[in-house]
Amino acid sequence: MKAEVRPNLLKGFDFRLLEDDDFGEDSVREEIIVPILKGLGYEHSKPNKIIRSKKLLHPFVSIGSVRKNIYLIPDYLLE
Image (cartoon, rainbow, N blue to C red; front, side, top):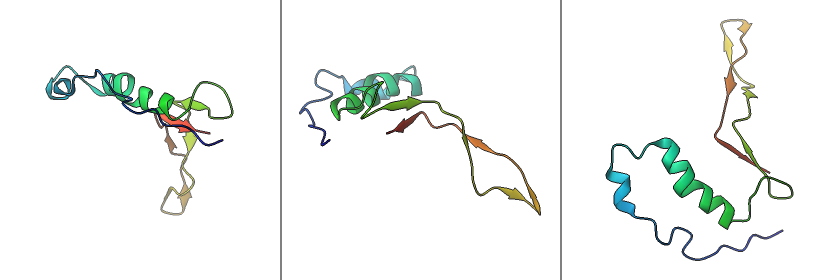
């Protein structure tokens, strides 16, 4: 399915907020990233599913000759 991108996804967003020290990572996710993902057609269910904070085993990490499990937790996985 080809997602139709809506123009002006961030219309009304005051970009001066990016200079505010209180506008942190969580604010960026909610006010910028989520509207863009939704505009691209992603949502909580398939076929264009957003998976949040899923724990993933890193496939290439070894310390010396011992394999050590290291996990990555991305903010979003997109199906």
